Length: 145
Image (cartoon, rainbow, N blue to C red; front, side, top):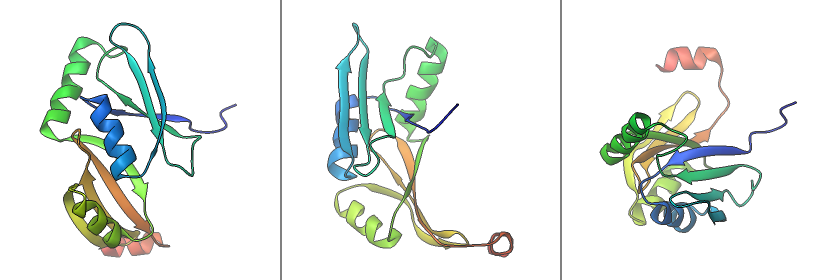
């Protein structure tokens, strides 16, 4: 029986730079960093309060085939790779703090029926959604779009 989500993957071109961004800029904790063969390294981070959910910072490669790995590299290079949704307490304040650290803000905080939302980019080309959630109904969503 499945009991939890324990791992998700973020593709990156530079594992050291990605780890440094997630740890030093976003405040995640470094978890694993293990070389596993000639050109494979297992690097993970997690939110300090949720060590059970690790994020693998993975270079595009096996088990992806060459065509898929190349697609992910191109998406990262263009800054168009999807990433994570991150819950925040105060979206506007978080964006101010991250912007002061040099993080690219792709979409400034905006009110949405479900909360306040912003979009940032990590240093590898992944966009991350920041959401300060609030209670809502389906009617709120229907009116808000």
